[in-house]
View 1 (cartoon, rainbow, N blue to C red):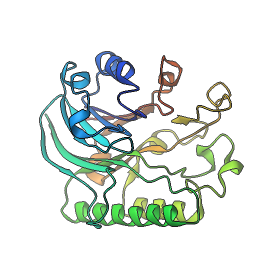
View 2: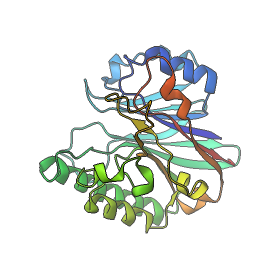
View 3: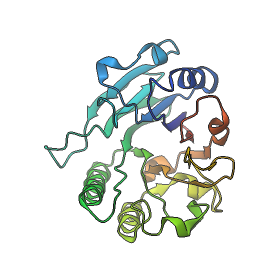
Length: 260
């Protein structure tokens, strides 16, 4: 089973790009972020014409996440537990069943947090604490799961072309990296880093200042796997070429292959 995470930076702006990607690259499950669309306004034909079931958790003009699957998704829920007053559409879960078993897919768009310090950074750290709590719940239930999406976390210096430029940024501040490590220390596996220890691999390049042409990127799109899912991982790769296609997002897809 091939699962891809992809921050599309606006489904309406990237309509043709996403449609071609689904037809040509054909993930079994796709987890999208920043759809920037209300549920009713999402152009469903983009995914349904390509043979996918669609579930969205949308918001007008901002945020928004979606789960797409070639096989039916079960028990789809929306919103990260832990704060009933949080109205931002950043989290969705669903269970996909393969020939070899089921996995709970948790799709997320973690807050950026800038400017930091400040209220937006406080929200980011609180959101990460809620994510840790949810991971603890799933681990306690012994449910095979993965968490994937745009984490807005640069795990370490290997994950930025110019790490010194990000020292005080919310994506790389010590508090952010400490919260990231707490997730890993639960026993989760960071899929790409396990497969590719070397640095110099990125999933985001800003539109400004020729970042793509200079390969001035950062790696912020990740897969975290529970032990049962990590045992089934066969590969994890970044689809870098997507950044050079017509009307690209500033992110590219990251792919996880499971023996499932």
